[in-house]
Length: 67
Image 1 (cartoon, one colour):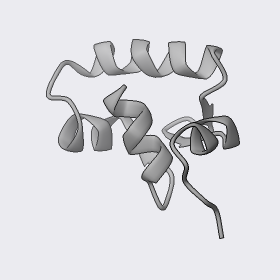
Image 2 (cartoon, helix red, strand yellow; image 1 turned 45 degrees about the horizontal axis):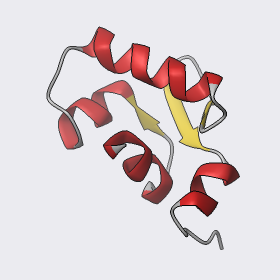
Image 3 (cartoon, one colour; image 1 turned 60 degrees about the horizontal axis):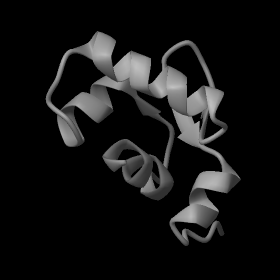
Image 4 (tube, one colour; image 1 turned 30 degrees about the vertical axis):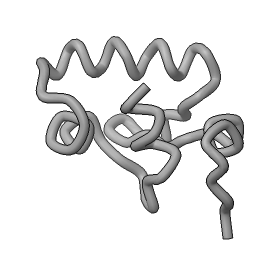
C-alpha cells in the first residue's frame, strides 16, 4: 500500500531505488516483485527499463489530481 501512495503522489517517474530509499527498506528483488504485481493489476506502468509511474486508476484511488 505504501508503494501505491508513493507512486500516486510522485511528481515524476520513479525507480526501484527510490522506493527502497523513501518507502520500504528491503531487498531490491522484493520491491521488483511487488512492482511487477502492481503492474499486472493495472496500478503502475513501466515507462522504461528502470522507471515506473502510477496509472490514472491509482491516482483516482488516492484522489490525486493531474494538472
